[in-house]
Amino acid sequence: MIQKISHIGIAVKNLQEQIAFYRDVLQLPFLGIEEVAEQKVKVAMFQAGEVHIELLEPTQEDSPIAKFMEKKGEGIHHIAYQVDNIEEQISHLQKQSVRMIDEKPRMGAHECKIAFVHPKGTFGVLTELCQSKHD
Ligand code: ZN
Image (cartoon, rainbow, N blue to C red; front, side, top):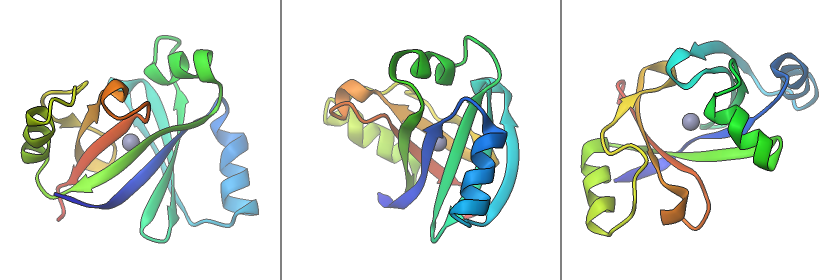
């Protein structure tokens, strides 16, 4: 079951420049930077109420985030929903004929199990499911 929005992922070219904006201008609490090697990104996290804002900067040219920005430029990349049981959620979507990018969960930032839904199955919105190991 979907519980709430976990985070919104935003593709950025220059993490440092945008960190200053989110931290000093929007004044959101800055939670730190994490590198997710598997996805070839550096992630800066902010707290906006219950929702995290994640700025994603590619660390390599073949990063999915770099490819995204080549086509669409900087901006909102994905919406992530927190689910209580990610395996169950994936199989629920598959039963509704929704195409998944990840048919099995993998590890994402801050020790969450994550899976991406194919944007063709969600009317163009790249959607991530994530299950925190803490709840
Ligand atoms: Zn995400």
